[in-house]
Amino acid sequence: MKKFDLIVIGSGAAGLTAAFTALGFGKKVLIVEKHKPGGECTWSGCVPSKGLINRAKDVHIARKFADFTIDSEQIMKDVRAVSEGIYEHETPEVLEKAGAVFVQGEATFVSGHVIQVGNDQYQGKRIMIATGSSPMVPPIPGLDTVPYLTNDNFFEQVTLPKSIIVLGAGAIGMELSQAMNRLGVDVTVVEMMPEVMFREEPEFAAIIREKLSSEGVIFHIGTKAVGVEKTDQGIRLLTEKGDDHRSIEAETLLVALGRSPNIGGLNLNAVGIATERGITVDAHLQTTVKGVYACGDVAGPYLLSHMANFQAKIATMNALLPIKRKANYQHVAWSTFTDPEFARAGLTEAEAREQFGDSIRVYHYDMAEKLDRAKTKAGDMGRIKLITSSRGKVLGAHIIGERAGELIAEVQVMKTLGLNFAKLQGVIHPYPTYADALRQIAQQVFLDNLLQHPVVKFFRGLGGKKESSAKTA
Image (cartoon, rainbow, N blue to C red):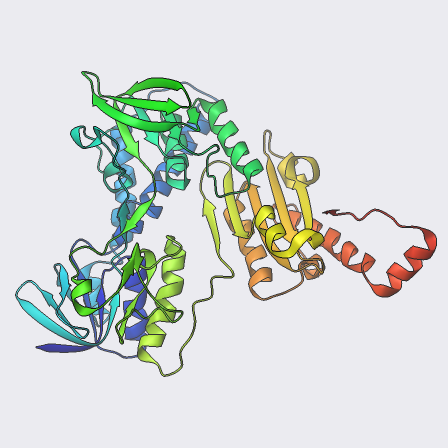
């Protein structure tokens, strides 16, 4: 039986990070993968979706100046080529050249230190489970009788459909809905919650929905899917909204209702690895079996590629090194790549008020009104909502606009390092840039901090109180 310092099951974002981290420590690593390396991110998530979004944006801009026919077959080929380009750096040959042993197949636990792949068994001092997740498919009557799409097979389409119903208005549903609509597909979105992207700041979610609506996407919000039927032209979705019962028809259906962890077939229960939705892990990302760790989507709680990367580094170091580190989820950020982009770090206003009461400060910034860079581009818009403590520490930030995903990174640095946001006003920002909006907000935070200084408050008390530049409760 071949023995390894670390066996990594899965080679998506989490698995590859775990493997390369262990190789960096000079360890002997086995990677087991039943599909191609790269995982969802390379083949059906981050990479191809952004490829499609970029091409759709090109078409959207070009149509301002000319009318033309789209070759969706070529577009889908181009998108798949993007994934193949990324895959060139993740192939089994690349992994083995880096020092790992790669085995194609499905892993099953024999014990806490031994797995079986096909007819062979492998022993690991430590084992890392990084099997990712798959699209969650709800038990809607009739759904199993019709062909439908998920993000797993969406990018395998030869051409785009003429019409589609998107079930779910989370990040995946919203990104693909806008992209398809811009490429000429008639898109109808059905969402059970009262607003799209329901976990986000309601005012920002509404902006995204209104933008897509203005481009032609049809929304049925607060609407439940209760049945699916096959028709001669495609599919019919039966919906319910209170006492209102309707049917919506389209060529096909995209199910975008979240994801479920890939834990089937691993034989986890037999060796004592507990699960509850995903694999149960402690603060060090160790499972209920000593020496077996889990990271990424299969462990949660955040099903994001960059969180998989974050967890994999911590879990691998904990597995291989004597000093143990805890996974801290206090500073989580993410982006949704609609146009305009939406990005978030930390708490919503409601969450902040629930935790810290009305002592928080809330800052609102309108790029179209205050930012010179936005004024140089017709129709450019953007908003920032910054939530700080009473002393100016970042509790949450929400940005919608051009390059929001890049802007949130600067806020994330301030938040993660525990820096007062006011300090950013002293950092020279190039002009004219979108990032200058953050410097301007920092100036407001600086002034509010100054107004809270005991000496300043004393003299202000003598001269009468003035309004703060921030909206506070």
